[in-house]
Every structure is written in structure tokens, then in C-alpha cells.
Image (cartoon, rainbow, N blue to C red; front, side):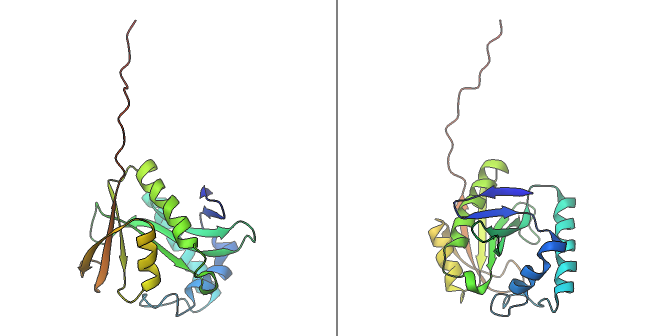
Length: 183
């Protein structure tokens, strides 16, 4: 199921049986997954991981997720875009992205991120969305800047590691007159 499209990208649900090999190219790469405690070791373990993640978000049924970013021109999965609750925080949502190494520097994270923020604010009606980034991940810090996210500072609140916290508040909306007349 497609969540949204941008000029160059389709953001859609993962299809474990079809996408495991391409996902493994992302999540089996230590340069991409340096922040994870464990990384996938085979296409089959990646398939099982995708099945678990897809099922978890299906059960949550709250509009959040972990979606594939597909390049329209080649139908190649270039990465993942995430909108989910931060750990141990029932009200704080984070945006995140993981891109295959060959897709770095092409603006895909920013392009998908902009649309994901719109989705979070317009569809899910979130009042604020956060991003957490390892201090040494300069590329992701630049993405948060391009997305207009404000740096809040360092935090140890999430994932048991020191991270930089960024925040973007929902754009103010002009209230329309919704009065109805009775005849």
C-alpha cells in the first residue's frame, strides 16, 4: 500500500517476501546500521525481521510505521522512512530514515522526510515531531536542518545513548468557519 508519493519517490509498506533482499542491502551494511545493537546476517533473517515489523505496526493501527522508500525511476528501494513513538514516551513521535549507502547524498531523506512530516501533521494531527540523531551523524543532522527542525540539545532520554534532539512543531492552521445553519 502506498502511503504517499513525491516527485521522485514512492513511500509504501514493506512487502517482506519481495523486499527482503533489497532491505538486507540496507540493514546488512555496517555503515548504515552503525547505531543498531545487532544487524541482519542473512536475507532470511531480514525477511523475518520485516514480517515482525510489518505485523507490529499493523497491530498498532495508529498511522505510524516503518516504510520502504522506492525510487520511481528504477523501482529500487533506496531506504526506509519511519514515523513512530519514541521509546517510553506515549506522546512523543519521531521521524527517522535509513538509506542504502549508494543512495546517500541524493536528497532522498529530505524529500521523503518533508512528505512524512506533512503526513504526521496533516493526517495524524501530531502537534510536534522529533528526530534523534547520533552527534557524529553529520548527514542526518543536515537533513534535520533542511527539514526546518530546531536543535533542542543533547539527550540520554531515548535508546540509552546520548543523542541530539531536534523538534518541529505543527504549522499553525487557520481555522475555517465551520458553523452550519439550520433551516
